[in-house]
Amino acid sequence: MTALIETDEQTALRTSVAALGKRYGRDYFAQVVADGTHTDALWEEAAKLGYLGVNLPEAYGGGGSGIAELSIVLEELGAAGCPLLMLVVSPAICGTVIARFGTQEQKRTWLPGLADGTRKMAFGITEPDAGSNSHRITTTARRDPATGEWLLTGRKVFISGVDIADATLIVGRTQDARTGKLKPCLFIVPRDAPGFSRNPIDMEIDAPEKQFELVLDEVRLPADALVGEEDAGLLQLFAGLNPERIMTAAFALGMARYAIGRALEYARTRQVWKEAIGAHQAIAHPLAQAHIEVECARLMTQKAARLYDAGDDVGAGEAANMAKYAAGEACVRAVDQSVHTLGGNGLTREYGLAALITASRVARIAPVSREMILNYVSHQTLGLPKSY
Image 1: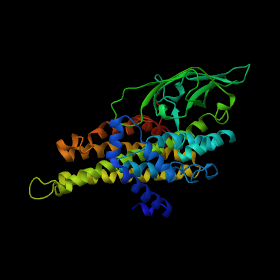
Image 2: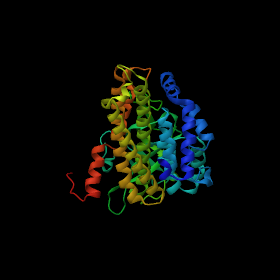
Image 3: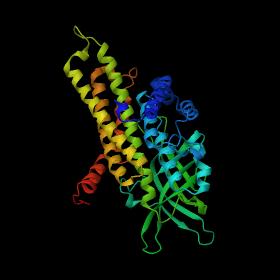
Image 4: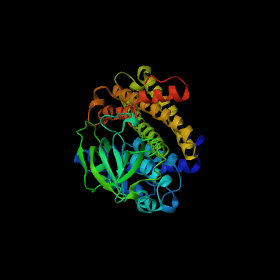
């Protein structure tokens, strides 16, 4: 089915990444989680094969392709049971923003390492009191008039992989000299910057990537820590947020496909009466429905990626939100039905589905809730008035 809407190169990439994922699989992922370590072996092999930087410019060691290709990598690894969450953050968000808006020095410093996997970046936007309202971000940056350096102060929560990232791309706000209003800006904050601290958040999610609360206490940054133009504001921010939504959709699709695959294996072999339970429509139909929903969500994800890679930021914004919504909903229902298909076995560690009950909710909640996506569609697409 994918051959109808993907290029031969994309189909070949999907096949190759699926083979890599199969060599590692869910057992590898589960062992990494149990050991409290990271998916370094898979990350390094994916880097050697050119998968991590497939969306980044060739001039800096990347593959020269786009978010469409990177989303294929994440989806196929997820379908094999070993997703790499940092693909969403490091090459998709941070790499894209730096590639599009960074200075030449920032590109030379960061893109080669992001492409070959030797460097990672985290992304910090969410705040305790702002939630999904980016206009309430209180992390502020002000210039030191004496040196031209930036002073960054604020807090962030639910920031992934800060402990393994060389730096974090922080969304802050600066004051517009003309209007006095605060406008969003992005800053590269090194992991060891004085005043930059992190505290782990105790999560009930089985994942190698940990979540952190960040505190920025008068973090002093050089003038060139600012990414892009100070006046670009939302344009630069959404250059990262649209790929984030597309990649979250791919993450959800991979998880859903893995869950359905496990359920199908069980439904084909589990016998209670005369035939396998998959012969009964009460088992077969819900799984067929889950598969249909996943395929529909994948089509929207591919549309969003294609629009983004074509440079249509407005069209990609709408499609990326829809893709993230559709994939998140499909993922939750697929996991739920898969667990239900296995009955009690669906809650055992042996089959590896129970942990996905919690993990699948992430696709509904992050990086933006389904309710905020419905707000976006009702306002931006349907032209209905805001309630807030």
